[in-house]
Amino acid sequence: MAKRRRLTAPDASEIEALEEGFATKPSVNPFETGTQSAPPIAKVSAETAKLRGMAAVTDRVEMARDKADAGRWRSAEEAGQVVQPVPLEQIDRDYLRRDRMAVDEEELQELIASVRQNGLRSPVEVVALEDGGYGLVSGFRRLEAYARLNRGHEGFAEIPAFVRQGSDSAAAYVSMVEENELRANLTPYERGRIAVLVTGQGVFASVEEAVDVLFAAASKAKRSKVRSFAAVHEGLGDLLRYPSALSEKAGLRLAAALRAGGQAGLRQVLAGAAPDSERAEWKLLETALNAQDQRGAAAVSARGGRPRQVTRLSPRSLQGGGDLSAEVSPKAVRIDLKGRGLSPEQVETLLTLIQAHVSDAE
Image: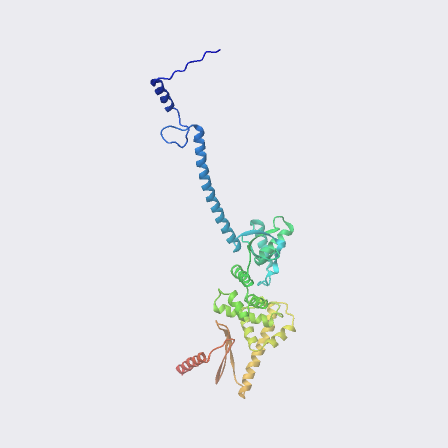
């Protein structure tokens, strides 16, 4: 049988030595502060918790930034300010009636060479349609250049485009006209023609409204001229072979003749002829116009009972719309205002001005 060991209590000096030894050891409590350092595992845990807190804050900042960027992207996309590659086969060229009647082949070849060498510097503009396709708003020549390049070269099956998510027809036509006015000026006839066409499609209630909206940035005088060429297109557009070649002066003269009732005579002349050039067509029209002027002068003479020398002044277009013309004979002056309504008070004011002017001249 083993002999039991007898235990003895330590004395005071031994207890004091043990306490001093424990005091020199590091604390195992990672939350305890003081001069004592925590063991390595406690330090790692504390640093990891701290880093997790910082990472959570950083993640929230990044998420907020991404959300703001996404919002700006959606806004830009809805406004048609985002450029996207769009397949050529999905674009409807005839979505709008084009304002430009013909494409200059030489200029188009220059554009094709530039696109092939340098790429497309300015995207086209399209509107997303309900059937999943796209309607061309502006960039007809650029689209045609891509289509021709796509026939013999790779990399042109899609064209960079600003994609509108929704647009009414009026805004689309305004965009088309603005682009062509800035890049390559439309002819006077093309401006009047597009106003008539979009009115016929029901986009605008009248030609006057179409002109005011499509050419809102133009002066009143320019819009008045556009309305005159619109009248030429309405009266003679289906018979003219070279309408875009009409000068501003020629178009205004035709418009004045149409408003004076000369449409039937002008149409008869055009219907029975086949001019082979711009000059030949205008010569026909000019001959008819001169004949109408002579008939008008003869009618004025007949009303007087005896021949009179009558001078017809060239008609003038007014800024607010309408044409002003005058006839002068040895004993009378006739002033004619068409296409513009005036109140009796306004006419009275004009008569007073004329009376004062004539009195001063005497």
